Image 1 (cartoon, helix red, strand yellow):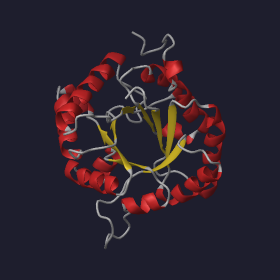
Image 2 (cartoon, one colour; image 1 turned 90 degrees about the horizontal axis):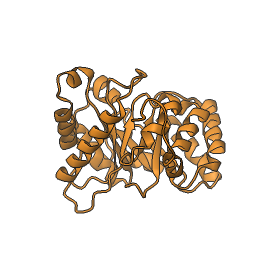
Image 3 (spheres, one colour; image 1 turned 120 degrees about the vertical axis):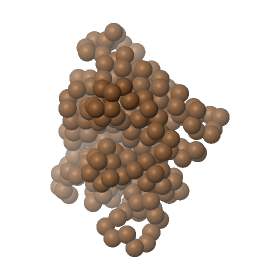
Image 4 (tube, one colour; image 1 turned 90 degrees about the vertical axis):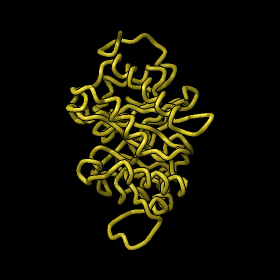
Length: 266
């Protein structure tokens, strides 16, 4: 896992009209030119801006350095599902990744692990790489149930042949400005790695584990210095090209090998 490029995924959520999405994509592209090969950016704009973003990146011939993803997909390939978007439609527009099971989808839309599992299958069938989000609430954490909740989400959300990305986003950290301590995050990453090894029926498991939840440039260097982490899923900071690319710069394996400072230093 550590030999693969670190993934920096930007989730724009429900933000971006044509002009602002075009400008943000161009700004990210301009600032990302100096990024090393050991970092890969994935931009996940709203569905309405995926084709525009993909077209800009193709025109600049960025290759695998910056890719495009969707924020959700339907579990069916097609059919009478008014207002929904299939994985094939995302791929047809140029998407390579898709975020699934984000806590905002689980909470606001009542998405269950079983539904997310079906979406994972649909995404992989369409050639997309699913980014499956899991995470515990503050109440579950305080009750000491975080490990069992995460295990249940992995069991229910991932297929046995899962080939994608796992994003640990503690719900209590999203948008709060609060992040787990370095020790807490390392313990959780160790737990998740063990769960993946025991659940997935493959000899060679290569599932990057990302962290998400109030990720900022100030925190990025220390978070990404944890050897077992595969990258970060960025929300609000991805709407600012400077902040987003500063996080990407911190993801360089070379930068991460330097001495640490800040709240994650131990």
